Each structure stands twice: as C-alpha cells, then as structure tokens.
Image (cartoon, rainbow, N blue to C red):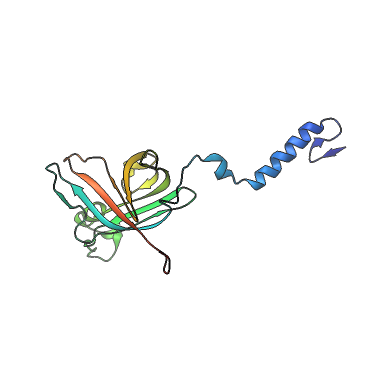
Length: 183
C-alpha cells in the first residue's frame, strides 16, 4: 500500500520518520530553526533617542545631530531591530519635492540622519550588542555586522560607534518607552 508517495508496507521506519519531520515542520517555524539570535527582555521594546553626541579627541562631548535630535529604536523579541536618528533642524527642499533637490539639500539630508534595520544579538554576559545590518542610510554598511559595547542603566542604554576619521566617537543614548500605567 502506498500513501503520500511512501511504501508503508516495505519501509515503516522511513514513513514514521518522514511523518515526524512533517509534523515538526508545522510546529516549529522555519525562522526559529535558521537563526541563532540572542534576545533579552533587557532590550526588547521601543526606545526613544535621549542623545546623539560625539566625543571629541580632546575629551569634550558635544551634540552630533544638533539641539534636540529625534530618534527611535525598536528591538523585537524575535531578533529584529530598526534604528533612526535625525537632526531636529533639517533643511527643507525649496521645491517641496525630494526628486528636485539641490546638491546642498541632498547633502543635508544625508548628513542629518543615521538609519538602519536588520537583526541583532544582545549578549549581556559580554556586554555587546551586535547589529547584522540589512540596510543602512550609509550603503557601505548594507550586509555588514558591527559589534558595539553597550551600557545599560535602568531604562537607559547607550553605546559608542567606531571613531570617525576626525577622531570623534559618536555616542547613542536611548530611553525605554514605558507603556502607560506600567512602571
């Protein structure tokens, strides 16, 4: 007798194994099998930008995105992240149309933001946050992985970015968004 392409009389072990694999395939989502991402309740959630600074070579810390920059980070429990940082005072397109901007307007847009998304690993034991970047506002970072040492104090997380050519070190500071009515 043949069922689902298997010879049930001639090979019962293969049939049972195939059926077990089929059942498991429906019970365990494929992304869970394919990923090795570490998440932690310490970071899962929505975070708002508290500061986007830079540390100068002389030790001075100044704002990197002007006064009152805006930003948001979301870390999901299944290992995805989205991060956006924008300068508050951004040059508007004189034409009102991003497709007919001037070179200065395009430059301001590019330098006035830092955005990206992808997957992440959070390792409290090592104190590292690893970004597996799918896409970034800097195309050279697409498909790369960067590791950041972080500091988590209560509902504030911060990390430093690799030093730039001028020696300045960007620092991102985020505060957890709390649901209304919850501590």
